[in-house]
Length: 462
Image (cartoon, rainbow, N blue to C red):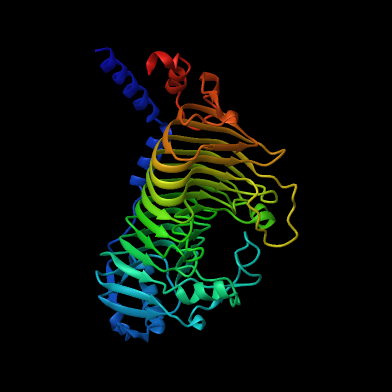
């Protein structure tokens, strides 16, 4: 009977840990995002001469179809239907009030000729191409200054055929920065759903300077050896919902960014209100990452119901002297790990700068990061949490974390300060102070009831 009552108490505590006003807000906000998937006008890509044989280049067909559909933008918008087939194309631009619909067994193939991916200007928050000075190749599916744009369908596929770009990167024969598979800039009201994205040359889905973005029920796959094939990278964007996605790539599954060093500081557009829910995936890098390009600031990030397996790192923050900016108010909960090298990793000396003009005195602010309700099997290290000398990462809060760790040194922490409760193996000394009521404002979104309970004698509870 005593054991039963103890279990009941423990479950009550865990239930309280799951109560967060941010959770309620993020769920209701994402569910309330409405997009117009049904359009009054529709055409098929075949009406513009496209041939789905995987050989014929259909760039002009896509461009002409979208130019024609632009006449319906003020009449409720239009849908471009892509039927079953293998539709080879170079880069093409979307328009406002458009639905790009990929039918089952429809595959949009990226051309293997780099000339079919024209150059565009570097992003102002980066100051240059991410890999090389100068411009960058335009993404396969591209759009800027759009409103109400949808990429969806009956689980069709967009395949970037990125191996030619990966080889150029490895052989150091790139002339310009590689293209993304999908990039939307300065756009509002974006929905990407029910599509599989394969083999991106570089980052796969890149909403940059965007607002009100929902990415739902999407699959992203690239070989684990493919360089920099991040899955979804919200960049200087706000009100972004990423839900129910499976991602397996050669780099971070999701990486939240906001500009690079002085260029990002000057541009000054943060990423905020980012909600991630129902992510499953594996990677040679991190499951959920923030940075390393975070100079415009990142805040109000909520991630829950995450399953990361066969991966290097689960949760990671990357930054460096010279970045400036901030990462604050991050809340990660309900995470399951299996066969992961490092569960939690913060890197304060990541390096990589766009040029030699960065200011090493521009130090990032990392604060109010809460990670809770995590279980893991076959985890090598619980945490490698390394801040910056004279720039301590503060208010790092860990709670209800149980990891089956194989390393004899599960934690390695430096230049960080925070709190913990119910963490096994026991957290490192800088994070070992017990969470108490006075820390409620320090720990992101931990409600008052939790800190009140944590302040009691845990030996009597467990």
